[in-house]
Image 1 (cartoon, rainbow over the protein chains, first blue to last red):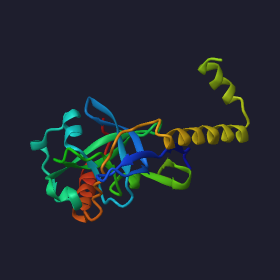
Image 2 (tube, rainbow over the protein chains, first blue to last red):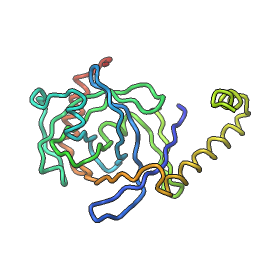
Image 3 (tube, rainbow over the protein chains, first blue to last red):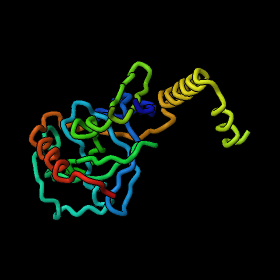
Image 4 (tube, rainbow over the protein chains, first blue to last red):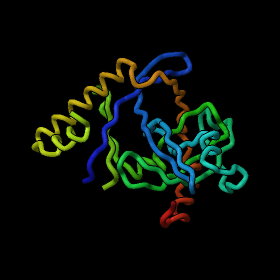
Length: 138
Length: 70
């Protein structure tokens, strides 16, 4: 079993202004020669990873060049989405390939969901202690 | 003591003491976070909780993209 990395929960605010702790993960996303340090929500209820439109542009992605299109659910259903694959690094772990739904939405933060963040990493949430731990898959 | 010296000292600790140090630091970070020290940033949560079709497309893309990247 790999060593674990530990992260604290971070206070976030919803649209009503309510503050709650959430598992927000710092991560480095890489596309060709571009890399970007960002934060994203670990969302075990999300079917897919989500990449906000502006972050994709900052990584040098070209919207028109992405040929895989699909529909997302919830609030994101109102925006076009296209599939992209990036390299991603969490802490000292080796880079992995993560597939993202690149959405035209700009007011969303990155989301890490079942496909395929939770297929690459094992995550243990300790909400009562306001921390979570991540390991690479066994 | 410099950070370099501290790290050197930490490496010499027993496994039990290393775990204690890790726990102590995690608790400190959690306490800082609870106090709102780490960030005041706001995030909206837009979970794609029912996006099975999108998940299938991404899995197919990963299958087609097997091999080293970047």
